[in-house]
Length: 352
Image (cartoon, rainbow, N blue to C red; front, top):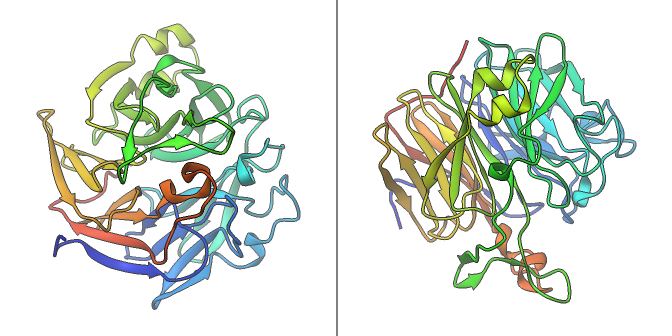
């Protein structure tokens, strides 16, 4: 085990976490999607060693899957360069069909711990099959970029104009956003397959991990079920006058990253980080394109989402692959789930 991989919090009970984000002042936020666990609150802050609903229990108590004024099922939370917390609500418990009012992006002022804005997505942008997975921000363009990792519908990138709240789809059903169904990854010496049906099938989750280059020029992304990753011109994504074909022409295959990845992240030195569930590791791509293993540790049981802050990369490890869906019926997850951090010589990307 690595003596530099530090446990920030051990989740000894409750649901499995996916997302993590750390504010400029060191506040730590996590979220718990509704995938079958009992989830009393889907967004939380870790305060004095306790996990508490954030910003309060009311915002974590929806009246239904179409409630625009409460969190339905949150997959990701991200602190933006202005030190505001954005909550990405899938509106899709158990990956169910979405309804208008559920899929949304909610901005919380960390100074007052109050919701200051909610962007509810039009059904033409957040489709009934859409699963909003992760989000990154470029405040110079006043833009947010979101991956749609739907496992039963078209994948793509959703672009949000933060000034107007308007959102639109890019790379809709583009091959770079889709799962590689020929791939047979293995995690903990077992093929990672969807075993919820009578016959094991490849996992079909598409565009998942997302990261923005340190200079904001390109957006990086990868399907969950793929060993390849891709980038696209961020300016083209934001250009409403560019055609879909013109945007697609800016897509670049960035090569084989050595395995499947759930999370991507960048630092202010221009390096990219990626999780490696197969290796129980975090990898890093240097500015010259070479890949290195940053840390490999048996405790990294499905490293999921990362956050770069205060000289560390934070990462959740939630044993996703041990859920009954992937084992053939038995839930093999064991407490604790974990939030770790590993020291790095860099800070977060702040495009302001």
